[in-house]
Each structure stands twice: as structure tokens, then as C-alpha cells.
Amino acid sequence: MSPVPASPVPPASPMSASSMSASPLSASTMSASPVSASPLSASTMSASPVSASPLSASPVSASPVYQPAYRRAYILSDTRVMIGRSLRRTVREPDAFTTALALPVVLMLLFVYVFGGAFRAGVGTSYANYVVPGLIVLCAGFGAGTTAVAVATDMSSGIVDRFRSMPIASWTVLAGQVAASLLRNLLATALVIGAGLAVGWRSVAGPLAWLGAIALVVLFIGAMSWLAACFGLLVRSPEAATGATFVLMFIPYLSTAFVPAGTMTRVLRPIAANQPFTPVIETLRGLWMGRTSTGAAVGHEAWLAVGYCAAVLVIAACAASWLFRHRTAGR
Image 1 (cartoon, rainbow, N blue to C red):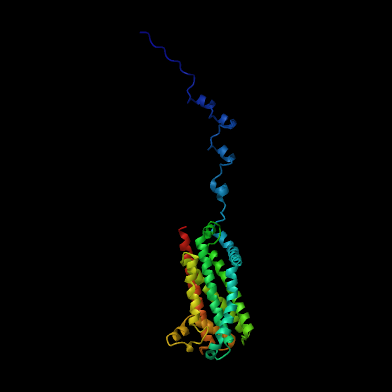
Image 2: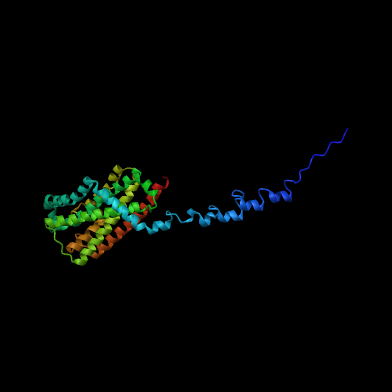
């Protein structure tokens, strides 16, 4: 058998040093070929538009607008926008807005000219002078019902979900409703005072007493507005919110708003004398008319009124914030 001839050996192995010097991965070709450079090579990394570290040169490395610092910087602007939204919504509902403006005037005429003759004997003075503080408190309770309905409508209509998708502080939704309620009720208070002046109410208060009365009215309306916001967050529909705030409109009738506590029955007398609405009414009556119907000092009633209003304001505001976060957390 003849020996098998040896197969020819190529002149250079693919892994030989000489072939590596001429291969497409050689240094010479890497420097000249447009596609030969390794994506991780030092030369290409320095020139490639995507070679920089994402943490140092990436377009998304800047702080996004959704950061808390953004919200803090624009929180006043967010609140102003929400207040404007709530006020425009009030104007665009003419039936509710007209009712809110007409109610103080109608109640003043009703109590002075229809019930005033029967009530005058128990108050010891002109009934118009007696009833004005009570009507201010009653109208604040009615305005609180409007706030509760507005909050319940926002929570059930889906608009809150849209607000949460925007870079705004979520609690400004409630702040806007409460601020709009404050402005609406201050307008109603001005109408009560105007109607009272028209039917014969005359105040003996000086400038400082008027400032104190206005400050107390603002504090009381703010407390009632936050409490109404809690009612609006607790219920599931605007219709239920109307019923939930009925108690705020009914409690003033069990106070000294329209008749002195001494003229009530033995069962109702301690309720009227010791409920939170009575110190507010008596403080306003003492500041404007110089004396209270209960015989207590104006300063004593004022401390009770401020304490009640401040406590309700703080508790209701904290509760409303917690309820809002709880209602929107699962959305």
C-alpha cells in the first residue's frame, strides 16, 4: 500500500500572528474601516453619540417636573387655579348660586316680619337686632351643604383621577373648594347684614369690635367648610351629601339664634345653652349689640367660640386630608 501523501498545509494559520496582523480585527483596519471598530473600544466610545454614561449625559438625567420640589414651588399657583375653578363652577350653576344669595334675604324678611311679632316679647329688644347673628350662622350651615355636594361631585365624577395624573398637589382640590365656600359665605354674610340694615338692625360696635366679629365669622365659616368637605368625602354621591349636611342647618334652631334659651322647655334649655353654635352667636351678638342674651360676659363667650371653631377646623381639616388620600389611594 502506497503511503498517503500529506495534505498541503496552508501557509498561515488563521490564529497566527501574521494573519492576525492582516485580519479584519487588526489595529490598522480598525482605525480605517468605518464598521470595524468594536462598540466597546475606547476610540469609538469617545466619539459615539450613545457612548456616554446614562447618569452623566442622558437626556433623562435631569430632575423631572413631578418631583416634590416642583409641587412645593407651584403650590400657591395650584391652589389659585383650584379656587378659580370652584368659583367658575359656582357661577355656572345659576340655580344654586341664586338660592345661596336669595336665602339670607328671604330668611331675614321671614323672621322679622312673620315671626318677629311673636318672638319680640322674649328677646327684650327689637327682633331685627336680636336675629342677625343667628341668621349669619344659619346661612353658613346652608353654604356648608353646597360645599359637601361639590366635593362629593368631584369624587364621583372622575375629575379627581385626572387631577392626580397632573403635577399638582392633590390636597389643593379640597383647598380650592373650601376657599370658594369661604368666599360664597362671606358674600351671604354681607347680604344678611345689608338686609338687616334695611329692616332696622343697628349695631353699636366700634371698629375693633367689627374686626373681631368679622374674624370670628371667617373662622366659623372655615371650620364649617372643612367639616362639610369631610361629609362630602364620606358619602358616595352628591345626593347623599345633601342629607349628610342637614344637621349643620338644623342645629342653629336648637341654639339661641332665634329665641333666648330661657324661653325654651326644660329639656331643650341646657342643649341650647351648651352647644357649640351658641357661643359663636352670643359672641357676635355681644360684639355688635353690646350684650349677650345669656347674660354671660362677651369675653367668656368669645373664648368658647374661638376654642370650638379652632378645634373643629383642625380636626376637620386633618380628617378631610386623610379621607381624601384614602379615597384616592386605590385608584
